[in-house]
Length: 361
Ligand SMILES: *Cc1c(COP(=O)(O)O)cnc(C)c1O
Image 1 (cartoon, rainbow, N blue to C red):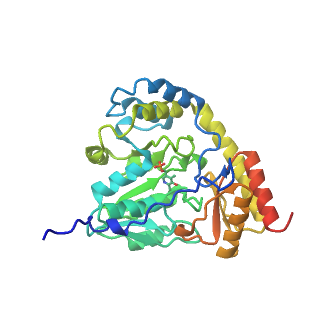
Image 2 (spheres, rainbow, N blue to C red; image 1 turned 180 degrees about the vertical axis):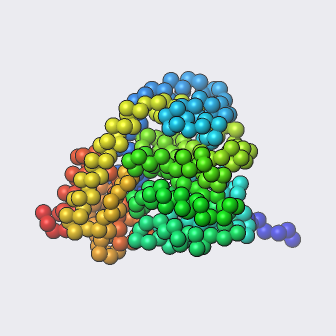
Image 3 (tube, rainbow, N blue to C red; image 1 turned 30 degrees about the vertical axis):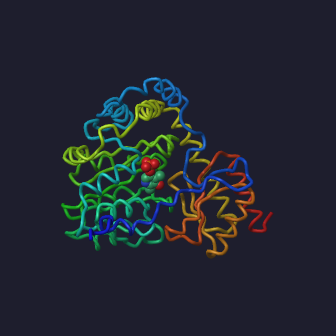
């Protein structure tokens, strides 16, 4: 008798990732505000570059992503030699766990943290550990109290998802300073562009041996479907991650699209400008309806209801109006809905539907 086939320990503890819903039965073109996508789509320059690259699809793509890394470095003021590109920033998160965490080691994430941290930790055989937040904000003292010699990685999204809250740079610096030197602090900057004046922690990465920043083209750049993200890290960490990166992890079309997108500064600036004014309007509108809503530093807002029943009823009403948002129950917010900031007319529809729901119409 042979031994049964079974996966590595931890794998079966992974719950499948729940993405934002994208279809509504009986609605031809629903308003999708469930995945924090850019409502204006990608830069036209990126679309043109991708179209132009299609004809070269018989060629293998670059293995070192040199032109894309140079374009990112130029736009963001980074050192191109300390950038690694991945299939979304999800792949960078995965590389970090695979390379630095394993059985007997802990990967810390916060109470309402992004699901991929736990998934990638378990995939690597490590133990994910959830640390409480304070009033929907990452709690530096709680993380410092929990981190120890077995802590390989600490993941923080700043601005955070699904709360849209922000931890000021002095707090992040205090966290980096207080962690054991053997522990890597990962600053997930998926929404960094949306926080005015925030560099995603890049300057902190430049100063320290144990801080890594991840960024993505999926949110501000409107390229979630293309799957491109990157990491910025000390040279020694980049060297390690490149050893486990597939040589052709990014397609030629993806490389061309991302390079053109990061070069079109005017497009992203205009998208960010509209997002900032529209999210302020959305937050004010939700508060006027008596809903709980923190200030947002991202491209979405978290609307808090009295309880889960009310959140579900609001979700059902929005769906009846053809609008899809996210019910972030798995993130500890059964009583809330996460709503992506859309175009002005989209946000008008959301506010009108919720006004009707609250009986204030
Ligand atoms: C959307 C998101 C990402 C981005 O994932 P990609 O793989 O780059 O598309 C990363 N972290 C958080 C917290 C996110 O919300």
